[in-house]
Image (cartoon, rainbow, N blue to C red):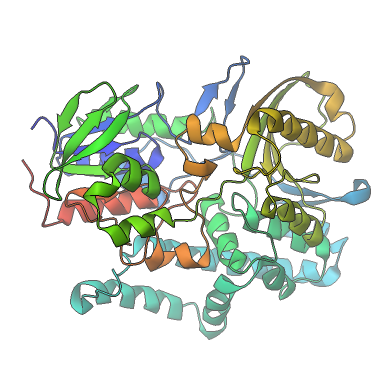
Length: 503
């Protein structure tokens, strides 16, 4: 065989996994269906002729990954603020400097201003624990090997205990709480509670009153390093470019415009892949960075899997609700640098989510806005993948109009500055970027799809019923958002797997 391992998908997780394999001396081939690498992490030229970070406004791999792989990635120079745009022209600007943030919060509540530094410190500790949890392999319940799997779990529990009795209880309790309840236990100002709750629902088909949004708040806080996006100089595509360069330096190979049609299987063992053009490539190890449902039901096929497992795979909850509206302006958009969130209140966010329950585009959406010179990128929620009374050909214009008018209502003059608009709908996320149902996280991070239940109960260790086939994308434990954790974890497990017959 020409290769020891094939990785399906040249997104950040696929490239991270490929780098760890190549660093261990394996001959690795990465196959990407598009003509550019990056997956969700791309800076690309859209059809209307302008270049933007299409899906994510920032991207920061976990520090240990950057260190282990020797990536030339610099930390962001400027620390930009997070600004929540409220009604009546008011705004709450939360700076990364706790003292400046406290002064801004004091205009809404002196009590909340006094608690802000304590809250930030708690969230940082909670995020550090979650990071440790994402580095810890989850047991394949109900099968449990006490010696092999018990020690890592004991180490994780020790880290939880070291938070102290008070914070340990807070972290465990917060995971199942709603963002409304969680922020209410800290703050009294609805403006501040809404600003924090917006981060909890960012990218998820959940409202701030949904159970488990305390967990998603900690998850997004970990991946961002706080409330605000901290942009990558030159665009988020620099991250995947650095990963690709490191892989090639280690002897790995990346092929674009190489769509994998299916994983070839012989007697329940992966033997390689077959491309859409009919080419077959053999390897004893295959890692898929595609979402689990697509991997199992399309790339492998139900005929190769146990019937109960197929049923479970069909039940994975993928509920995309995000659209991206990229706007080229004449430069007079009047928006400040940093992350702007249109989240005036908890009730506003919940009403925006209500529309998604009924297959409708939110009339008053939750928006998160970032700028880059003349270009404005708008993250739009909620725009459900499955619409009840519209198709996405018509709904595209609805999303554009509501995004621009909602932002203009809070920042007068924005609409007049608009020159061109390019919108990416949930359908585009599926057809162009390969995200089933337009789900950015390869599966919702809800209480029954996290930790040892991600992607499926009993299959949380990246392995699959097919020997030699592993999952390394965002749909497994450690995934969701931009961190690279699931790619790192999958590669480490695959390298130690006894059932892989290396050539």
